[in-house]
Image (cartoon, rainbow, N blue to C red; front, side, top):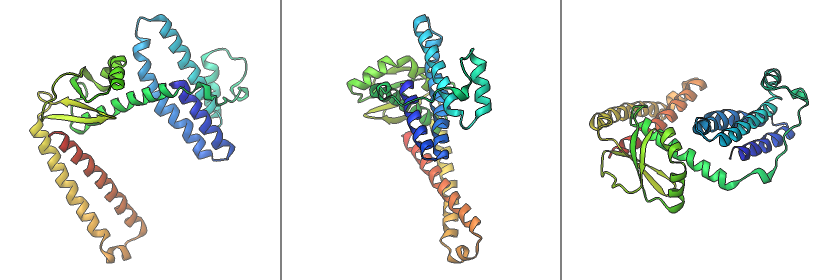
Length: 269
């Protein structure tokens, strides 16, 4: 999976550089280094690095180091001095980074099944984390979670990645057979499956509903006020452009906040 991600980043950055679209090329390596490698890959390999399988640890360590080398090469056009310094800090090199070969895209290194599988893992963890945050589940709380309507492929993935999903999503255990509670639970959909997180004994559901309802009421009033100003022809005609733009941005933020609050409230049942 991570090798395929490197190849796709190489392709995006190289095409952008060839077209002199430097913002797009910098964006490609930035999002890979920060979002894919740091945010996800390093987290995903921690169980292996802390495990007892020495062969798996050695392979993973070499892969992580290879990927980091590719990151340094791809970052070098934008950060030449610090990448050169880091390049030599790791290991004795045969050449300076500025003389290193630019990576070439190799379609043979793109494994779509691996990409699909890890995209599913990331989506599962992201959806569960978002749902937990929306209803203020304490970060340290590990909660038994129920999966409904999972197909055979999802059941296989749940089995293969069980420990990883539980660690990253703060789940005590995943149950695919238990009956889901009719209310007092957060539900999120990941592909065809529904992930049910019971909240009884974890948070005060009534208090959380009251908090969300109060927040919705406040945001609704603010949205109505700003919308009223923007619908007032006199205000729009007289106000400076930057003031109008700020009001429009504030309105968009409030609408996004309201949607999230209403989703969170509906999830509580």
